[in-house]
View 1: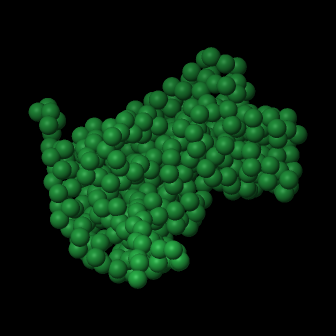
View 2 (view 1 turned 120 degrees about the horizontal axis):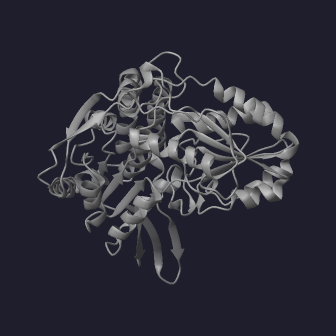
Length: 467
């Protein structure tokens, strides 16, 4: 370990700049030790029935729901999101664990009668020791996405939370431990991506690794994993388009755009990141959108009435503010609302940025082609569905997309033609635990949630039996 680095990591509240807590800075040696402990624990854990493992998840989900308020307050302190959003995320974590508990009894293979051989059947087996690298934006929910299927399948899972938001993940892990899951089956290693995360990616003992984060870091993880034989699930963010057709319910679409973009201060992989509205309704839509966004109350997530918290840190705030300033300087774009760093005394210590709506920027500028991880929404006017789909697909990403329409024709056309892992019609952002989730193109590979995530944590063994 670099001698200049302390052996602890300070977790900073992005709303106040104050310390929310500390965690150990795990080294590669610490990760290797966790892997060794998981190897020792694996056989005993895999020997349990899926239903028994699922029961532990269910008990944990009940305790998480009972401790929702305290967990949500901790999540708000370390991540910054409003308390209402933090409570929703805690409930979402519990719902995911309950879902995998509910399908734990469905783990089974296939039977194939072969008259010329005898009998052939397949059995499902756990992969072994798996790893999970958790992002800072939705740390509790995404931890559940990875933990639920991995544990029900009979694997051990080494969890590395983001060094910016590890506190609530540690609490969730301790609840799972108390509900029967051994610590060596679910160890948590807190540390940097370059140290702890790299150790997971490089290890040949890790059979599968699930990573959620930026495309750049995901590509690095993929390179480190090359040649190790591990299965990779990569969710690498996106630049989700939202298309509003001329026949859409404008008020519902406006509400969907606001919720879909400014939830979690715009720091959500499937957030609405660019909006295409048809010219027939463009002026009405922009007017209503501007009015609604201008009413969003920005502030400390612990304060009553706050609708949007800070960005994760000052670096993220300044980066997003710089993008807005650059668009203004380079193009004849208009900021309809927001765009400034708040100057009120109670917000100066935090990484706050006003929710922003921009129109008039060219459709091939950074706002429309890259993932802007902050509270800024560019609006472009299009003539028809063909142009909207063409513009929506003109990006290297393919995570999510939505279309707002009352036409079945538009719904089916958009669902078929949009390059995205998930397409919503008349909603955006919501992802139930039963629904597979993942991206196309540079938004990653593999799927989380649903039965397919459970399958991804298992391998098939074929047995041919001759009487």
